[in-house]
Image 1: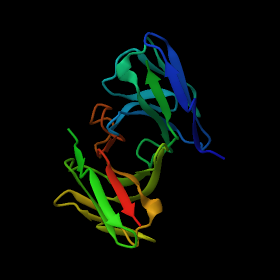
Image 2: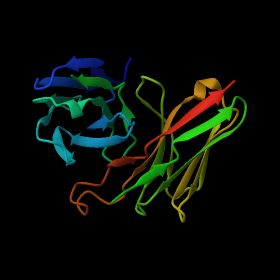
Image 3: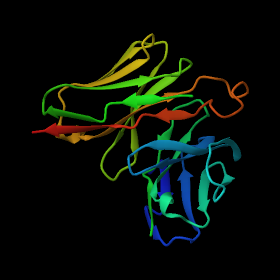
Image 4: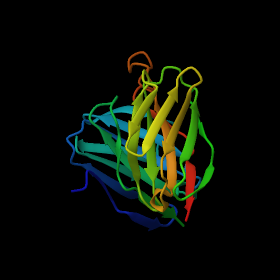
Length: 112
Length: 120
C-alpha cells in the first residue's frame, strides 16, 4: 500500500490552462506539504497544512492554491499555467509539523 | 536565512566507500536528514540524526554530525551500483512556530543534491 500517493504522475499541458494535482496519505498524519523541484533538482517548500489549516506559505504566486478537504488530502490547483511552472511537484506528510516527512512519488508537470 | 550546501558530484568504484558531505548555516537546526532520489522517482528517507548526536549508524550507512562546524556527512560502506542516485541533505529549522511567525518551524531546507555515480 502506497503511503503518500499523487495523481497524476505526469501532466503535459498548454500555457494558460488550469490544472490540479492531487495528494493523499494513508499514514494518519496531521501535516501535509507541497514542494517544487526545478530542473536543477533544487527542492523548495511551497505550502504546509496542519489539520486542514495553512501554516506555511512560502513566496509562491497566487496562481497556486492549495486545498485540504480533509487531513488525508492536500490538492494543488494551478491557474494560468506558465512555462516556468514546469517542474516536479512533490507532496509529503508528517505526523506533526516537527516530525519526519515522507514523500510521494512526484508529479512531473510540463507546460508547453 | 537557512542555507544548505552539498558538492554536486561524487563518483566511486563498486565496493568502495562513498562519503557525501553537507554544510548548513542554521544554528538552531534540530534534525538533519538524508534523502535518496533514484532516477524518475520520489524522495526516499534514508536516515536522520538529532542535533545532540554526533554519530548514527544504520547498516551500511553512517551519519556524522559536527555541530560546531555545521557539517554533516553520509558514509555508504561497500557502495553498490544500486546506490547510484541523488542524495539530498536537509535540515529542519528549530525555532518554535510562535516565535518564528509561522514561517520557519518545521520547514525543511534542502541542499541541491549530490549525484552519486557508482562504477562497476
